[in-house]
Length: 244
Image (tube, rainbow, N blue to C red; front, side, top):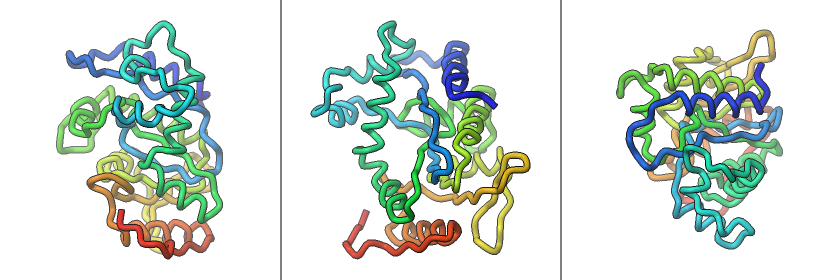
């Protein structure tokens, strides 16, 4: 099993070997910290990128002078600071609205949470990501570039030894199902996945938790209730109205 340093290095090597479409908006791959073990792991398709969003997030921090498009640029700038990159990613997880439901569920069930992506390519448009990682636009079969990234995602998931996995993106869910082939458990209504002889972990497939195509409030509540129940916890929706 690869270490976190080997995973990050493998992503950089993969980027160097890849011929990207001619575009000024190619960014360096995500560089991960070692994931927290035995946490609830939320899985997305890929990290989005918004220079405006990063500037707004970092505006009142010690990192306010960062120019996101340059800092995360590819090829990696010579003065790239990996420790600083980890710090700003931690700020995003703490304050970025995308993660607010991750925080609320983890606080309710008293478990740590992690977020991983199937693919490390920074891009907001899912259509552009599909064109880079799929053999065909409307089928979840991975091309060579996509398969190599998915393999590294699996290594990250192994390091995380997840208590449970929530794949919160419809296309990511299709790809996970095709690549990992977890088995459905009729008793709990979720899927079970495992690494070798290790204890199976539950996998929940879902749409996005925030954003324009997010689950409605009540579907999200059912998902959180089911996840908590499978993990032997109780969960009730907050009394305050939350329409998002």
